[in-house]
Image 1 (cartoon, one colour):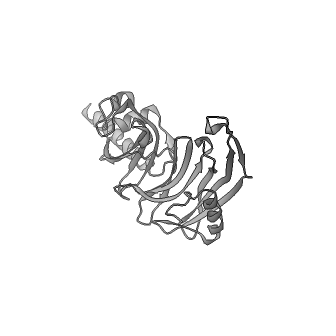
Image 2 (cartoon, one colour; image 1 turned 45 degrees about the vertical axis):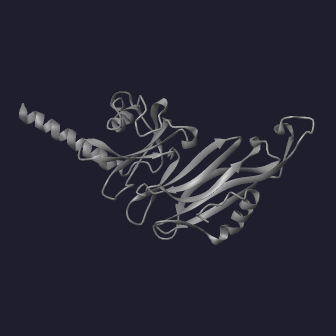
Image 3 (cartoon, helix red, strand yellow; image 1 turned 45 degrees about the horizontal axis):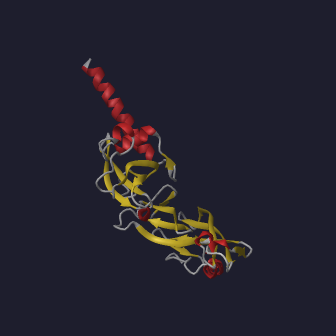
Length: 275
């Protein structure tokens, strides 16, 4: 009987080890969290995590807005060290608008059977991320961020390094749509798509497509509402930006300079530090 139990235990441990190894080859982009995965990953984070797959009440490390901290997506990789398997959970709730109504939990696979919380990145939403193999064997993250307020919608593209205190290591650009901000003029920009494609050697390139136009608004002198005027937009143009990668940072290609200049003419706040 003892021998049989020992065999079962070894088989279970072997299964967990295989599961952890399989995570290193898991999907390269953020994936929706299943209930079982939510309970497994949140068990070391809060008292209710292992049973409900969410944290109620809000953990002490959050701002405590609302009452529930719930997972949305997960992405696995070697974010802190090539030797470790990490999981990054995008979490919603327990944060104010200024912190994007959430943040991200970084966990590390410990031993054979459990996860350990490593850090909480407040305000960093990672539900639209893609792994980027770095030169040191770790994984960095390309992420799209979205923020809206006061009638303005902003779409960002960022590079995150989860070993850095601030996590944000590169901000490529910010596409602004200010049509609902009631201003007399502005931009209509949207990030249509972004992807990694083969570059030189084993290092990838980044390609991003942005739709851009400008507008003016004819205000009605008799109306009290500045938004009541008719919006007149220029024809939209689609621009492509490409970046090379050296294993640590991305750099805009010379062929994309003209596109960047056009996007910046439409929106002076467009450019970031990746250009």
